[in-house]
Image (cartoon, rainbow, N blue to C red):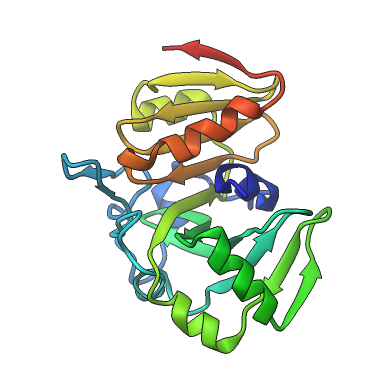
Amino acid sequence: MKFALSIIALIAIALIVPFLVPELGKQEGVDPNANLPWQIELDGQGGSAVFGLRPGVSTVAEVRQKFGSDMDLAIIAEPNETGAIEGYYAQVALGFVLAKVIVTVDAKNELISEMRERALKAKHMESTTRKITLNPDDLAAVEKMAVKAISVIPSAHLDEATVIQRFGEPGERLVVSEKRVHLLYPDKGLDVVVDGNGKELLQYVAPRDFAELREPLNKLEGQKPLAQ
């Protein structure tokens, strides 16, 4: 399952907390000016760092060290698909920004299939999406695996102007519906989904892996790519 599409199925209605007002997003012990979503560091070799993590390099254990131990880790699968191993945080302070965070583990389909066979249980989420609880031994193994993508769902609505103000002009603007637009930043390894219904999504990968975000979008019905 392509994580660029499967993550969208997990987006919940955002909490009403202003995205751009530092005073309302502050939490004790959190530097409001550090680890913000637009603070992306590039290494010049196709890699990047955001929130103190490196997509494609940092492990699940390192994510726990950064965001806390209360990660909900499971296989998330659509019908007739193998699924992906994802870790979910209901709320994380990213500087002064509060957000839901989902990390996608870099695991091949064959390994995920084996883990599904050993899984303890499965339950249905929204629609027909299934959440599959991993065997304890597999959970321990996943801790050492790299995270290939980090997805962020801000707690308040973002509009396109705000995204461009913070991240700059996108390399490509792809319209998939009247209310949904993808702002693509290949050089940053970033896809920002701006949604008129207030369900924004930021997806980060290493820039060298940007094709994993871009290619699934080719299949979206009604897309209207507009080069910037």
